Image 1 (cartoon, rainbow, N blue to C red):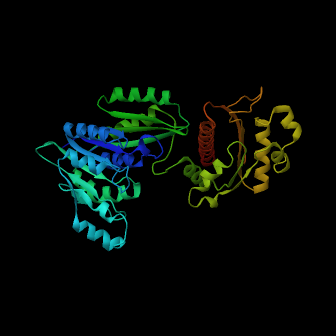
Image 2: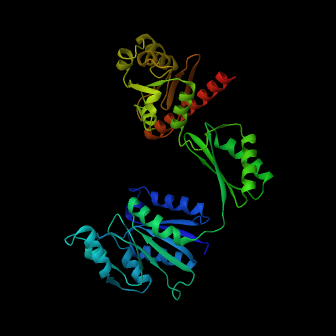
Length: 410
């Protein structure tokens, strides 16, 4: 039973109010056992559309994992639809009602509702919530399909999926795979390199996943040896900076590099409002090397707190490398660190000048024996430009620290 499809149910998912993390949980876990999903459909709480999509997926065969709409409120219609599809009534499952009474007390208001389940369904234990998962199969109605229905809240979904569903799915063909994340790379450069690698290994499968910070590459094939050969060829072919295996983020990599170099760091942030410092502080143990940040958002704060000369701002613009150089120098002195990163930019939608139009971001990275100043030009919404800025500057710090480490080691 190789085919596996996912169906996310709920208006909140369809309309983007809730981020669908359940699908990524399933996809990652099932890919590891050779059961990668072939499709992912999102449907609202409309019973007609829900029935149509579930019938379609069941008719195609394989395992169907649906999630959402099992709660006790009026918009939770999944049980009703499943009962219709499998031609089975909703009945009070007395044993489950007793179980809920033991867990939540006899007066818990939703016990009767949550104990009303499709008669044919096997109930899958939900140890953290009231809605059980459901497992249904009917060889007459859907001879080649099985349906798993799980509660939508992620903490309940993960509880039921990991314990009850995953063991029942069975393993497919074992897939060997590796992930490579290149820092500060361009997607088109990585793609050109991978096309040459695939010419050497025609049956290799790969995916390219760009972000503001890295370009990640997924290499996968049934042959582990082929994947490892392709990985080696990829590293030779593309001479980018690789995020080490096991390091989850650029900020974690940056902090690790600072530790190896024996350096400390501080930031002076204007347009990013402390977003870079927040990323640094999200890593446990960051205080060993990251000392703090000054959010100098206004010109007056840059002058009063970071001692940026007013004449420099007037001559070069508040968004200029001349200003960020002063910010970096003075925050390093203020914090007593070895390394300092400063940034100033115009994120919009208002602002900008002739010297520095909207989307201009200037930054300076100050190291013990060198200074790197750079101007970036980004496009998009205010939030998008901020995300691009934080990603680009974390990548800049990592690349510069790697070069410093190489120089120190030689």
